[in-house]
Length: 248
Length: 119
Image (cartoon, rainbow over all chains, first blue to last red; front, side, top):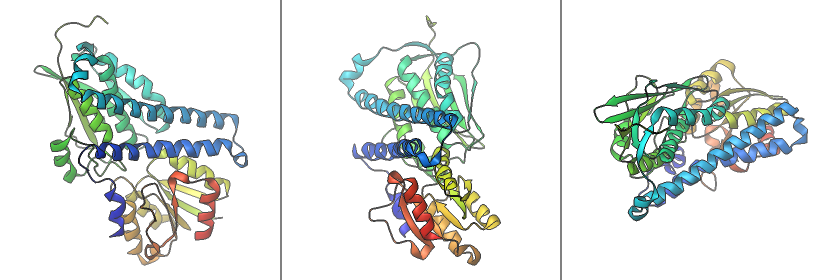
């Protein structure tokens, strides 16, 4: 059937080629958007008001930032696969999960607003401390929230919650979008982190963001997982609870 | 000028197409997924459907199948707008597709010409 041909480009591939194919796919939409907005800004026939021009320029900046973030995270993810580099790349220390989440949400709020999304942070006032590298944890949170924003229905919210489970702290990132097809959930749970895994129900997703998030979380001794939700999708990241207080 | 049902899951891309098509005098209704598209096509009977292929849930090809399975919807001309079609693009005329445009290289004149050629 012809219709399956388009989907074939999203089928899981093995080996390093999977990451390249997924990255190419993930960058297509933001680059297309940058191209379209550039044409709109240069098109005198559209007679944009100053306010409209400013809005499109802001969109250009947000979409460019997102593309650069993806490239930076891909590079980081690749470097973390090298055990020799990993040992020297970063130090793990107690990190305040709430502070990281609030900072990440602050950065993503303008982007979420463009997608008509609200970001909600329901983390306890008494912070959950985790064993992590702050910069890498920040990238993981940005990645999961960005993923939720793009696959949520306009006018809805992305929620962040944490829960302490034994020696672990779990951060939930929940969206109320269409959710993932049941047929894909088992496969995703089984293979997450091995290679980018495309799945249905989340539009044109290649699964690259989750793959990167798993690589980054794994480097901190954590893991990404797919939770249960009556509506929408919940991804979580588990990290070791830190008993020592953070200095900041 | 025409009433156009735009099926596109990315709201920022959709905004670009609405801007381009509105400048040509078209009236646009935007929906983000296949189910909303079928409902809107059934309720409003647009003059043309502008269809993205990769959608949440059912994809664009399934939308084409559903449209073709209803005699009163099968006659609505469709323009496919996608960044994931094989090269060369498949012949989708049997599914009511009048034109196929490549999203990655799309501009306002190209889109407006594809719409004008399909109505």
